[in-house]
Image (tube, rainbow, N blue to C red; front, side, top):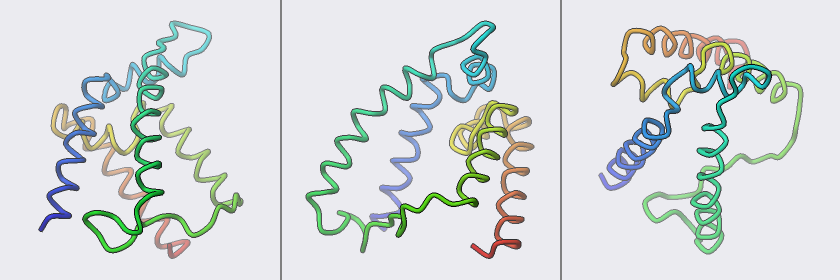
Length: 137
């Protein structure tokens, strides 16, 4: 029961951070990507602000044999950069730029503007399903 509760609390904190930082607003994300128009640096500050807590998390993780509320750390077993990773990154970036949302903000948007977010989340889930069917991962 502890692990789902910790996951819920972490997700709520993450979602609140996205909302406070304005990252659930697709126009703000698209303005960050508009380097030659009305560029909005907010996303850079949000990403920069995430570096310190993530650095602290990696330092703490390095000192632990296992997670505090789980069996094992769930980390990728490879560092290989391959065609699938590159294509996935390109598709993710294109979708992020066009839609102005990525999975975290889209889920947070379900609570605030469910109409447009629902369409994005449905398309995201369909893409995940196609991936699983075609690549079996």
